[in-house]
Amino acid sequence: MTVPPPIVAPSILAADFARLADEVRAVEHAADWLHVDVMDNHFVPNLTIGLPVVQSLRAVTDLPFDVHLMITDPRRWAPGYADAGAYNVTFHAEACDNPVALARDLRSAGAKAGLAIDRDTPIEPYLDILPSFDTLLIMTIKAGFGGQRFLPQLLDKVRTARRHVAAGHLELRIEVDGGIAADTIAQAAEAGADAFVAGTAVYGADDPAEAIGRLRSLAERAAAGV
Ligand code: DX5
Ligand code: ZN
Image (cartoon, rainbow, N blue to C red; front, side, top):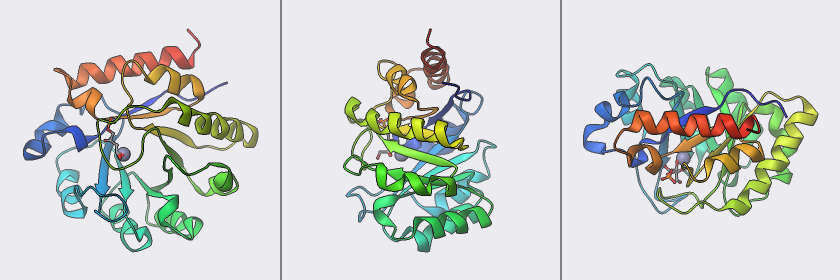
């Protein structure tokens, strides 16, 4: 199985929101993407940050933004994040009745398009539309809160997606999100994930940049079968 070098995307959900610019700079030279969790208190019970924060952060770093929208009505809001300079905008399959059309809108707005699959959603109904997407985010927890325990049974969806991508020669990042840490990242990489979101494991560490480097090497070794 050939997969591209892993992407490590620290989630600022676990950062100190009073010092966001500093927290972003702390990972700037270690991370590949910056994962931004947008929650609206409707699609998920939690409430986090939105477009103004993304716009402000865009000015303080060159890191690509990986925006994860856990919101209802993404058709209305998602293109605004692309316009704000997000590299990738991911919305939830469960929140959108025409994911292909929204992916097209996001790509037209200059962003990559991502489809997120929550804990209780099967992957099979979405395999046929994956050519419309650049990233597939498979939750390894129930979306809504950081710091939850990793659910290894959800890696079956990663395996299914990886087989499908390989057979279809698709260019698609398979991203996992939730409970990714030093003791779980290798199994996710072995299952076929090649992008890894980590909140608590990065911002809960004494040295966030070092934590990213450690996660990266664990993912690389697992993907290489070492
Ligand atoms: C939760 C978010 C995650 C969260 C992960 O719904 O999508 O990105 O930040 O946090 P950890 O890594 O702590 O599980
Ligand atoms: Zn997320």
